[in-house]
Length: 106
Image 1 (cartoon, one colour):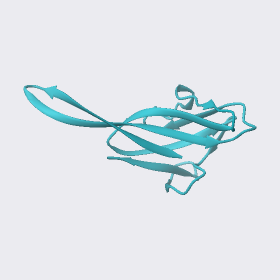
Image 2 (image 1 turned 45 degrees about the vertical axis):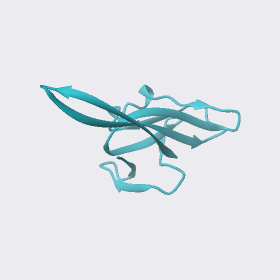
Image 3 (image 1 turned 135 degrees about the vertical axis):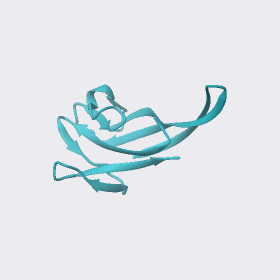
Image 4 (image 1 turned 90 degrees about the horizontal axis):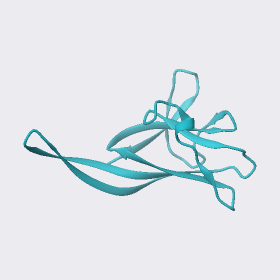
């Protein structure tokens, strides 16, 4: 499950103020028996090990990632196997014959 927490920042670019919207997105995956869960996507170069998740006492793995506004593709790496989100989300086909999950950050 990916959930947005709004964070808005403003940056200055050559005497113009440009609003840049960023949000902390919480990723969550239920896998009580898993030894490791990470999230990979176009926001981290599909290097899931850059974004490890932590397991709580109920078997939910969680992490938060700051994402810019726009569409982001992602999947979960569970004990070395790519998995999609467990809740209904938009998915699009990828080059490997499977599907990537999509989150839209506004």
